[in-house]
Length: 143
Image (cartoon, rainbow, N blue to C red; front, side):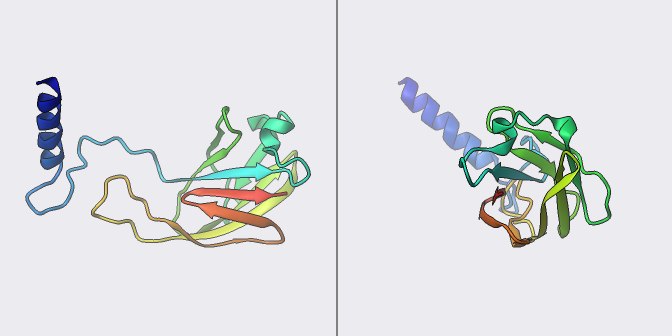
């Protein structure tokens, strides 16, 4: 009986998430800001450099194409740099201890209006002189 009630409530919730025009009702959904996660990997050890070298936030500076410092945070559990995207098209310069370690240029697709919290996907990503991979909004750079 409890399974039937839970199933019924789930169906009602799913149906109520659609508005009359067929678009999702995102009013009750909390979305994170548009961001890029950056994983800096040491090619010798295959470990995250932030964690491996105990790099603190104060040692990292990220600037956009206009040379303005970008807001970011370091995810303590995995060492990823979490950088808020302020523009669809931009470039980021990552410095550690005043040394430029990577420059990333990117573009973003148009958001999908049929999905809540969709801010578009990364496209046309270019990282000069370094190997990298992209998976969703995670850019892994091999230094």
